Image (cartoon, rainbow, N blue to C red; front, top):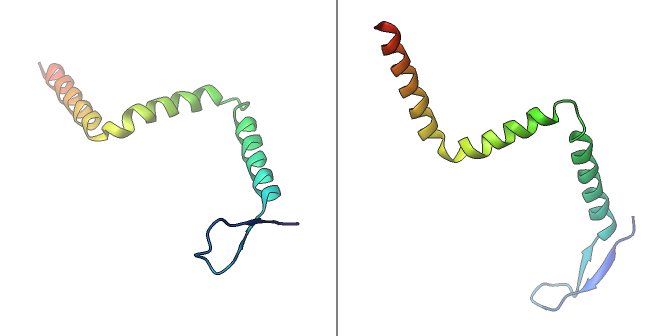
Length: 82
């Protein structure tokens, strides 16, 4: 696959040219996009979206959610014992 050389503005590196491969990065981005689109048409898309939403809410507050879950469990246990 051909690569393109772009002239660097700085001469602090040993080389005047920086090799970049625009074609392969575009192909990789397209492949990632196509994979994401294919996944969004799966039968479990709604479940996956719901789990991502729950994860985004719960993840930063994991200790708080665990404490609330334990408190609710203990409270229900005490109510059941009465």
